[in-house]
Length: 152
Image (cartoon, rainbow, N blue to C red):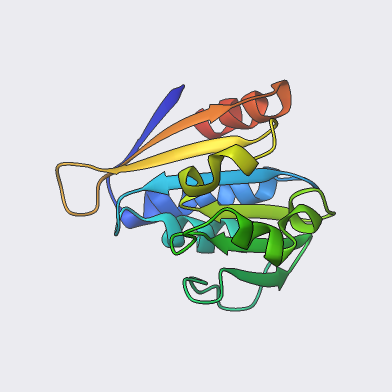
């Protein structure tokens, strides 16, 4: 697991943008962290790196929003999922195993459904107001290479 520390919001946005540039069809990004940790901010920046021009908002009440840029982006917010069957009702497999990129906020809520190949990012608040610590783990060489590029 690699750690990246951002001391301001701009650095956080840069990490997301860079990650968005690296993503490929079928990639799964899992985000965890407390309320206000920066999951949606990071998602917005990832979407910009994927050339999404629409304003990305948190799909807390709709569970999933779809955006289109260089690749389709499927933005999940599973905070309100109380029963894993709700994910089946949404047809999550079409998204997870489709031609786009999935970004899943609160991924630990549905951990048993996450494909084996994914990038896991835990966001923690730092000591200062805009400080963030990103703990990033990739399950394959593809994701580990992405992490290496983010570290540079």
